[in-house]
Image 1: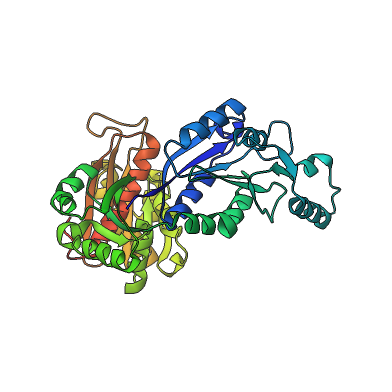
Image 2: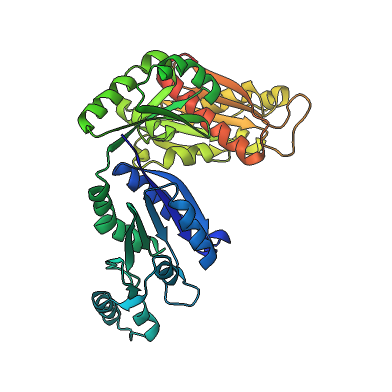
Length: 419
């Protein structure tokens, strides 16, 4: 079964200058995958006739579908429509239905229709116009040598409406695309290389039409198992059968299935078990609390937190004994254990978590270099502390420490999970 492939071309100097972020391509890639189309390449180019033609020439050697966004405005630097007319050996002609749409839109807004905007209704004669119900630039659909070319506005909400209403349904009908299904398995606690080693026998035994991708991110690795078939029900069953084998291989590192971040998976556990939590943070400066409260409904389990950055705050708000700080220092197992235990008692919660460390770039010593972080978890049965040594830059030390705290929390909530 031959895959149907696509290439996305985004046109606009503003993208290359970094003045706007290309969110269109990510959205289009997701939606194309849903209808069984594989995106092979995404290319960003300037508002230049030469670059547009070169991009089209290259794209048609790689893809069945070429989707373009940008360059359809009314000003002189918007060249796409004129370049396409030349590329497909045709001329521009007034398209009356498009002109009527533009006139209606201007009337609704109480704005006079200008000649520049009227010119937007002139389209290449051999294209199939794609209606734009939210803007003044119609899209254009071309077919040549079994390939489809579609040009759309760069304005995200206009492009998305055009894709949803017209382009995606027509592409699916034109190419009779297969089903593509993704299964996402979220893991934490194992680096990509070790995870790959453990999964190698399972991965090698996968059927040829199922592919595994490793997607590492801060503090974890997303596994994406992808299948392609014309038989959707059978493909779903095959994928699930393979996913069901993973708990027996890497079960203690799996925290969720699907697009679920670690903080959300933890929140679900806390809510289901009716547990509450509070945080005491030094080096992470409230980032642990931020992660936990970024999930809707977190007020059901997150009670509060203290950013005890200075030793005076540790003593006054968390009742850390002066002798503990004098003997062991703020960055120590004794201090972070006391922080986790005392914040739990202060807020009368089931769980307390804490961080204390040297985020950098300054403040390190030979015995405690930059990146030395202590984290702790406490409940009424136990207190657990861990020493981390990240040696990253300041922001990464904060982010990695936060993910480590969340993972420690996850492990502590699951008694059968080994550390």
